[in-house]
Length: 534
Image: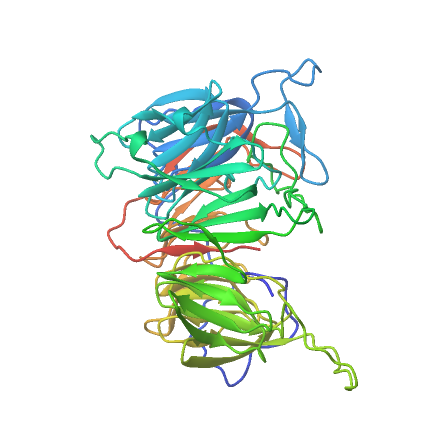
């Protein structure tokens, strides 16, 4: 099972499932209105000629962190960086440059940022700094003695810095001594003219051992610390599941990413959970994910329970042995597959062994509610962390694409040749052949998008805007607003493209400098978005 688009199917959709009406043409003329894209007025280019990569960007583009080599680190006499067959970087170690407030500065590392884009944590001159991108205020975090070590899971957030989704809290992990850790919880000022007082940070003492990662629940209600606890009465493996990183953290990459994997490395991870109202961390066996003012727990027999204080309610039975494909903390709904998973599988001695099962039923569940989605998936063998509360959740459970409408608690079957590109509020952008359409779940209809796309398009998105090579689509307006032949490295939430001079390919990075490409403004507004691509 894959979220979003997947490989070409061979079977048709379920004949009895709900289906959108109408079929857009599989090919259509190129976008003729508006005309070809133009550079944003007055915006200076970012970077210089040569290989360039994007580290991260604020949703509104107010800051951009990008990578370009400035020193011949491998001594071959030239500045160059490329990608090998495994996606790993080859050549000179790129430097990270931060563009903020009209200035570009070179920094040691980008350590973290919040989803809104207001707050950044960087390492500069070997000091950790918290930057308010709205006011430009910089706060030295050195008094908190943050643990600046990172691990090889560079695609994740830094292990020692965590923001909530609203950018109202920051969790900082420090390491004052061997097998000793502390966490510091900061409440960030909402006003740009207010200063952050580090002396008001709430210090949280943690039990002896190694803390691998610190996290905050998206709504900021829970601190989650993934720890390897030290036991005085027996030897304990305190190795992290991923090895420590020996070089500065770089998230820039070429046309495709390189990510490491370490099987059966490290010791037993225990989740330490603490409420931000009463931050006394305690071990929580079976922790799956935070859910509002509660949390989801898996018992050893596979049963899922929603825990609030001393109260527990069943979400899925041990007979199901659920894995969570999507958890919605706002609606308290969970998209699950019944994979018969248990930490302590039942003994089968003396009983006939059941034949192996390769497909598992999909359900939408909550305490006291079970909805059969009439679909199944292959084994996922993992629980996906919560990623907001989108109305439409894209799935590719088999030979068809499916949208799960979390408001109406139903599955919407699309055609077998459809690929879900993105969702935004009640709308989904769908690729069919070389064409696009927007599916409107509120009215159960398809809205064709003018313009043909590449057979294997590059896809980037932010909010209501999604670029599917070479067309930029506004989902709120259900129309193409721009055509740009060079795939951008990012899209801002007001529909601007951050485009390189030349696109990346299988061996070479994109070529700088980067330029902002303007899209015509639109007036509609709608709720948040999620993106998935082939």
